[in-house]
Image (cartoon, rainbow, N blue to C red; front, side, top):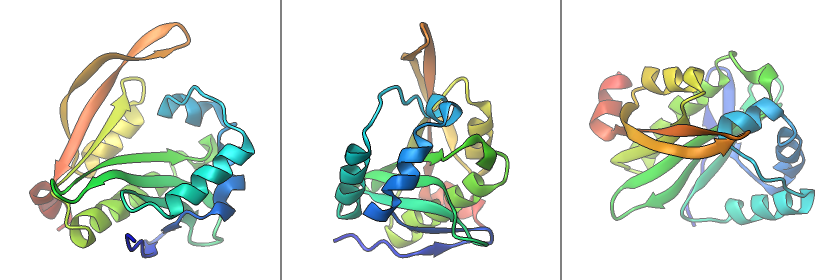
Length: 182
């Protein structure tokens, strides 16, 4: 089984998601702005979220972490390396903050840096990639700040409220991360 250690930063602690996180994750699915920024259009039952938490906590091809505030342990979101491919040394990245009140606090930036460090230094990845929608410039800025590079665009990838939006492809390679993390 993939070892998923606790990752500690200055303001956040990343800990592996467990079924106990289902309630907080389910609550985050009612935050309209978080749902929009992640392009999440489907609805989920509490039971589906519980099953998801149970499944991902045991998965070997992904590392799902709860982002918690160091000061009080409060759940503020999740950060994930998924599709971990040890042969090609690559993985996908995604992050979702639980509510708008967590935006602009630096939690996402710190969680991103912690999971990148885990991916490159512990999992020995060479490449981590992501997609971000064109209507989320704040996230694009954070990704560029931590070293992600724009690679291309998936045109009209998301239909949201009757309008199509592009998904911007970004990645960071291990040598770029090494320079960025000095």
